[in-house]
Length: 88
Image (cartoon, rainbow, N blue to C red; front, side, top):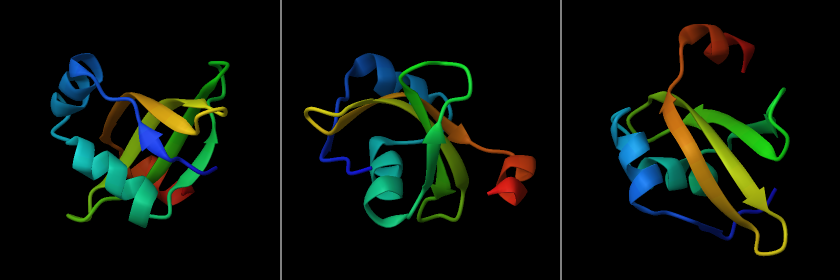
């Protein structure tokens, strides 16, 4: 999946900030982090990506993807637990 840009606003930026992440962290994951990306198991139109950010935290990003613009709108992102890490 190619992501050409991100749809950020105060709502999704504040939400990831509550989990001690920044837009730079999330964008790094997609631009340099080689995330493992898959469809959300229960929410239609939603995707999940797992991977590492520069400070070696393992994060999960939930997002919606617009296939026409190839932009992603991040719904949430947070540091993932070790159980998800080992499945990755």
